[in-house]
Length: 169
Image 1 (cartoon, rainbow, N blue to C red):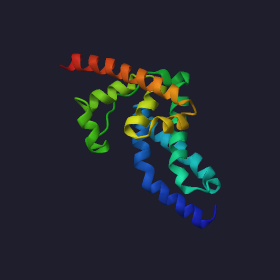
Image 2: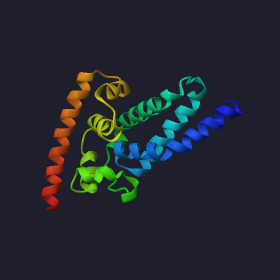
Image 3: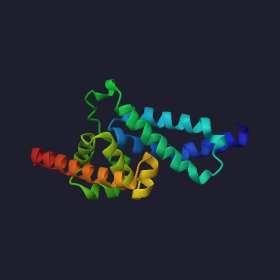
């Protein structure tokens, strides 16, 4: 890469590092794994930076790479171990999130118990703000699949959150 490309990449990285890390956390439920996923994503982006001609497509590339890495990682046998209960600090998540559920802790605990692909769909739809076709593009699947994964993910999350509220209430 030439100096200009390196500078552009460095600026992009500085601007997006925290949001990519937060999204990674929402996908995996563990800050250490989130750091690893974000790093994997940015390394992949760095390798392809010169080949990405349309800089408007960079966010989509990062999102797709991050989600696919999280789903792939969740399939590895050593990742089926119990996940960390570490929760983010209040300022690390967006304010609207806190308004949607009883507690942020309940939501994050619930997301950790939703299967990885359903969790990815929920994070992309409701935290990243993508529409159904955008999620389908990121995951490389049909719109119908996204709709069914969303419905199943929401049902699973409701079930889990119901259990969480019962145990905390």
